[in-house]
Amino acid sequence: MNRTRSALLSMLTLLCLVSACNSLGLVPAKSFDDRLAYAYGVHTGLLNGTAAAITAGALTKSDGQAVLQIADDARRLLDAAQSVSATDQPGADRKLVLATAILTQLQNYLSKRGVS
Image 1: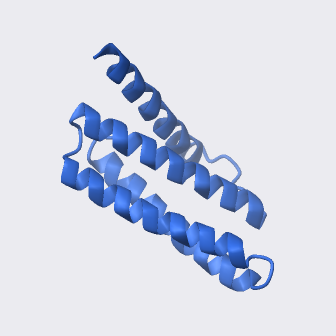
Image 2: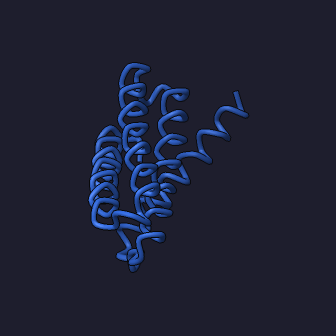
């Protein structure tokens, strides 16, 4: 039980850290590679935070699975953006913007559910 609680606190701390960076108005990444790396970090934080919230009972299993599925869809967009970045930079940027918007909405959803 203590191990689960410790893991939950670690994951929620990571999720809060990502959210805090946004709320503090820190300078966002500007280059494509930096924005992509940041989005991958947000994705990882969402996965970990969601898994911990399910384990702790803060999210139902079905709500958590829905969040994880949407996060996986965003990850596929990130992967696609990365794969075409050398040959289609405008297309890669569009995919990155879409994936980032999805991840931001998931963060907002979790925050409203008290998972932030």
